Image: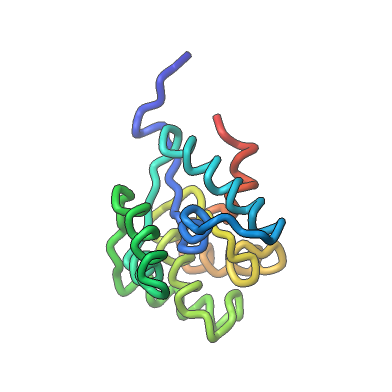
Length: 166
């Protein structure tokens, strides 16, 4: 079996909701619990097959809320590479909001998309199915990214990526 090199590995931008489900205490809600299990399973196997990235947006969001939960989220992303922000990312985020590909009140969600797009990520991993991993808005997100001359990162959930593990 051929061993993967860094050049062979696809790049995954891990959005904050994934980190939240990764380290959260087990939920009694059946759906949330399933998302937690899928996230943990993906996380345990992904580091071998993908290059994982976050951003200062993820770091800021992960630090919010309950201090113990924030500490667990920050510890989980400590070894993950962080993408530096640039003005282009803010400009693309604003275009996504203008086009209503992402609701105008969700600037950070638009930033996650723009960071992943401009940084050339293959995938944007998210459990935010309202604003990011939404099948109805993905085509508009793709259109805006491509019209602005950037690569569209395939947006998916950890559950979707489990089926694509090498």
